[in-house]
Image (cartoon, rainbow, N blue to C red; front, side, top):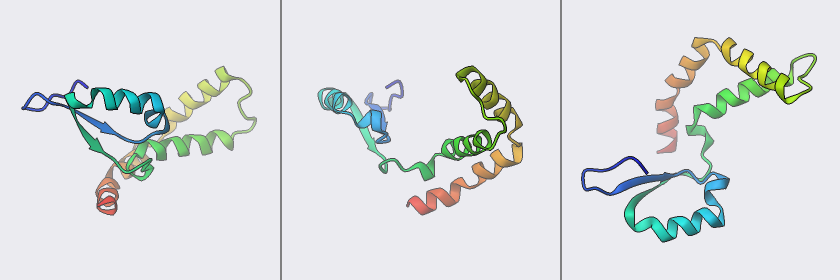
Length: 106
């Protein structure tokens, strides 16, 4: 709620993620929505979120690891290692895909 428009109304973009669509969140928004603008987003539109692609890449890499991580700490270590191994080109390709993603959304 920290983004303030020139007219003083705060802006809120709801992405319809499951936790954000809960009854508690919906009730809070209903009670407080007069104080900010509400931007609606496609429900769970993961195609617009390149983080989902990165998560999938990391997940695929971890699932194919031999031996697989056996503890939460080992999983954390493996994820950090794999994150550091992501190529800059992979990330650049995802960034460059945004105009196509936006066009598809529109």
